[in-house]
Image (tube, rainbow, N blue to C red):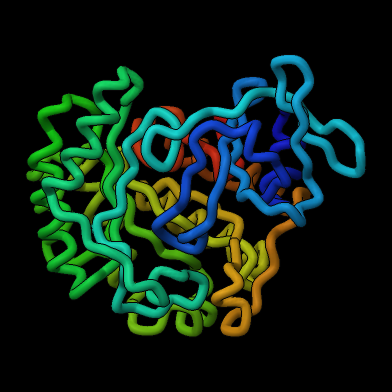
Length: 324
């Protein structure tokens, strides 16, 4: 699987696969893909996450020991399915609060009365992952059950307990007053505050109640606290933004030391009547990934130094400096 094939797979985002070919099937509990079952496929040193959908134009078949991905009865690539540890391979990627007071129009978490895991439950999950011998990192994310500040306090408590496992810990939450310093002092190694989109008109429509300027200020502070190559932010692609807006947004983030993660939009049926979005084409994904790589190189940022969360996994995105 080269970068072009991976772009095709991400653009489609789903696969028709028989359950007999899959070991442990994961279900996302955070973000736009919350509630969807998926697999991780690995080929040629690259990884891609695909939602299981029996109506998908992609089909998986077994050929000897290989999983072959077909489209229109033509082989696109072959490789193997990777079993998740927690949410993704090699990481315990855990959502604290599976609910949210905000109503971002691309996200299904606010529509679900999800649970709030306590520290004991999270520690038990990580303990099991640790004893597999496969745990390389821990990632903590969360919705906002009560307030951003309360969620940060939950994350701080969890991180302090999980430091005993002696693996890098990444955290992705909604920023709050003093959240960056609190999370760093608790023991987090990397941090992600998501801008979601750098198109301000679109942001106001799809993220009511959130403040893009506050997020950007928090990201800039995070670079000063966590250091270079340790601060990230997701940008959704397919909300109607132009390529020029994406490039400007990537430049703005990279200039302050933040590594942007370009994420193809996944509109869940629960949100299909509330948002107009189009999953980006393979050509657009490749173009924007190349632009992002140029900006990262310009500001001497390195994706391959990331240890936690989305970048070392790489399943959902075309990762600059890694995939191309």
